[in-house]
Image: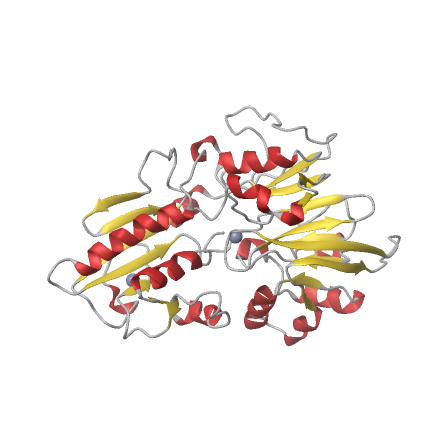
Length: 379
Ligand SMILES: [Zn+2]
Ligand SMILES: [Zn+2]
C-alpha cells in the first residue's frame, strides 16, 4: 500500500497447501515453493520478485508465478531480466486448475484457484485456493463494503457463505482508531463538489494538485473526475508508464499537460507546481487523499477538511475499516485467521483472539514500522 518500499506485508507462506507462496518472493531457497501468486503490484507485496535468486529457482524447478494480466504487464515493465516473463502465467478472474509440481517429498497435486476482485487498486485480486482437504482465502489488500459481501458469488454456495478453513486477511486498519471510513463513492462526491467549486470560482486561473498516500489505488477517483467534470488527471512519466497499459481501466488519466488543470502531485507539501505540471497557474488547491491520518472518523463527520484556504484533506480508504474487516471475518468465521501486516488481535492492548483461531498454528507476525518513516509518509 505504501509509496515506498518498507518490507513485506506478509511472509508469503500458505501453511495448508505446502509449496504455495503468495505476495512474498524472498527466502526462496528455504521456502521450497511450488507455485507463487501475486495479488497486486504494491511494493510491499512484491519483495524479492526481481531477484536473481528467485529467477534461478524458477528456472531450475520449473515453478511459475501466477497473477493477473495487469500485474504481469507491470512485472514485464519493471523486469531486470527478460527471462522472468517465461515464468509468469496469467490467470483470469474466476477459477483455474493449477498443478503444483512434485518437489522433494511433496507429491504433485492439483489446486483450484479462484481470482476475486479485491476492491483495493486497479486489478487487485483475492485468491481462493481449494484442494481436496482445504479451502483457503488470501484477501491480499482489500476493501469491501459490508453490504456487498453477500454479492460475491465465488464466496457462496447455494446462497450460503462457503466454509473457509484458513483466511489470510489484510489487517492494515484493524486498530480501533479506524472503526469507520466513508464509502469511496461518498468521499468522491464531496471531493468533486469541492473541485468544481474551486475550478469555476474566482477570477484567476486555478489548478489542482492531487496528492495520494500510495502510488496506485486511486484510479476510481481519477475516473470519476473525468466522468463528471470532463477533466483528465495529468500524471508524470513514471505513472503513465503503467496507466498507458490499461487505458480501458483508467480513462481518467493523461500524459498531456496542456489540456488539464488537475495533476497527480508527487510533492509532500503545497509548493510551486511548475515542476509537476508545466503550465503554471497563479493558484493551486492542494488535495491530500489518505486514510491513515483519519483516526476516529465516524459516519456523521465530514470526509473532507479544509486545512487552509489552499489545502484540503480527503478521507479515501483503499483498505477495509476495522468494522468492515470484522464484518467480513465474522461473516465467514474461518477456522484459522492469519492477519497481515498486523496480527489479527484486539488492538486495544490485550492480545485476545476475536474469532476462534487455530490450535496455536496462527502465524502472528507484527511488522515493525519505523515511526519516523510513517510520519514522513503520512504526514
Ligand atoms: Zn496494496
Ligand atoms: Zn504538484
